[in-house]
Image 1 (tube, rainbow, N blue to C red):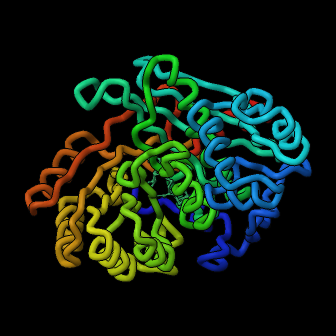
Image 2: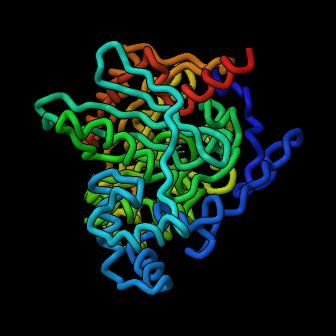
Length: 397
Ligand code: SAH
Ligand code: SF4
């Protein structure tokens, strides 16, 4: 079926402008923009502070700077949330901190594990309302036993309105703040520690468009990367985006070697604009130029995600056009083909195994590495936005 238009109008996106006559842009919760505003229940939220902000906080309350390092290590290395347990701080300081600060944690609502036990999906309640989901995926042993990849969310829902995606169908409820992003990883790490396993890779491929929540996502990246935070190397952190060109350009200039993944899904502007309203604002040519700039500045290979939809975007000609597009822009690329996970009410069909193979070999023939994403956790709906959608439906019954 060519270009189904279910939810073509999207949720109404404040970035790409009005794409729908029927739906209004959702209201965004204003995020705290400076450390003083990062409070929860009237107390300073220490989980929402970067290392330097935490140092400022200790100076403000009349303590030396180095307290920040001590407290960060308690929080991230030992997973401690109660000041009372931070035994290398004096009793007086612990009481003072309990009066003016808080180290919050996310409440786990549901966890589901795939039959193969290599994928686990977590649904967390957010203290200020809403919920968020994350997925934990184990590597096969040959890639490093005990190493786990975690897929996290950056928003509750998503404003981008892609017509094949459960998050797009939901619309945006709100941005997540720094600590709500980092805490997804911290909570999963806590689950892994007793088995001697550790989070080795983090991908922003859960709910939401990470570059739409740029500042909070970048702060979270810095905390995840910090040696006093979770110590995950920048090269092991991946941001996936539907293609917000100005933010990709901004990211190129941050001077950090993050991995960038682009959700491409189509090589012709008319089809991409139908599937992904963001393309009406920034077309393929401008997206490719931004990716080329990202590659030139960071020297990081760029991954292009491509969902294969039967009869929509999976022809041999489109595989050739894809290779031509990437080669013409001289981007060192990896193409990752994704079998589509069906979303209730969305009338696409996944491509046949034969069409997937043909597409893969056609791209690979042009010298571009092309992989097919291994399906993990299909039995627990471990696809973008699906657990939360199912949970919401169950509660509506
Ligand atoms: N908003 C970002 C990151 C979250 S989506 C982005 O779009 O890149 C993460 C990936 O899941 C994207 O490549 C997205 O296109 C893909 N995706 C969305 N819905 C899917 C579905 N139903 N089946 C398979 N992949 C899907
Ligand atoms: Fe948002 Fe990404 Fe889903 Fe598009 S694919 S609606 S950008 S989460």
